[in-house]
Length: 340
Image 1 (cartoon, one colour):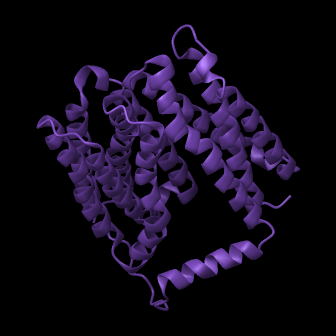
Image 2 (tube, rainbow, N blue to C red):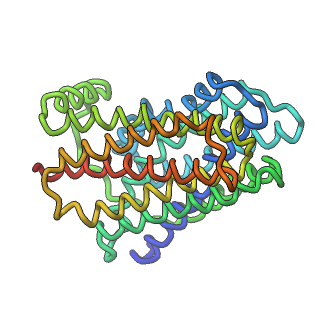
Image 3 (cartoon, rainbow, N blue to C red):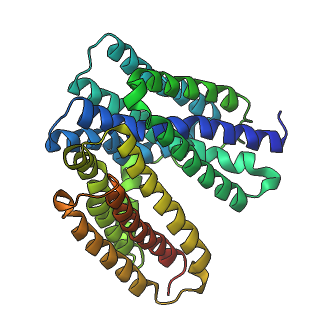
């Protein structure tokens, strides 16, 4: 059995082998849909929905499966399966057969596998944290997730020069290398016997409990609004703005993604540090969301803005927009943990 320190390092290695490819996918997929195939706005929105929608169903289901099975073996299986979609897409691209339905199939497969993997990996963290301590382990894992995505985004910025095939092969190779790290993880202790309850019944009870809570339902409503009005424009509108109004490619999409995640990191760190000192968190949430709404209004002027150098202002505007969005979400979560 590996030592606790080695087990945690292997966990981090497997995490990096998952999130660097995820960062590549975050740029490469909308680039293929919007820039290479030049699909219209509706098609771009459907494609981005296809890659995110599986989480709605399979994320809680994946948690249920992880609770009933062996998370290490499940995660090993997910790594092996997750390498298949980019490999298959690379082979089709190499043969010159890229099509929109193929990208939708890729999105559904990758999104579903990723949704199962997230709670499974989280279930292993208490087992490998050991002497590191769970709070510190969570902080390191979060930092590595963001860092891995940023590295992947930087790699994907080269798609205009290299094409998609090398990057898709890199995705598959990295995910497969992650299996070596997952293989070295210890098995978690067996789960205690639990009542065999219906998954859908558990979901319904959770929703009902949240609806009755004066602290939880407003947070869920605000989080839903942020998903619709912030994440929606970022996933669908921004790639179209980069393509149609700035004639940009993979590098410009990468700059926008880097701004988005840099703002998320900065806001998360700032409010994690300041949350203990803040009062009247509900009012601050309102300020953050209002600021974000103003910035979204500025985004509506994109067809009339001609930044110099190219894309400079759109990156800075979206940086500010996501800062306020992430700030509001962080405040929301703190308002649940510490009522005020």
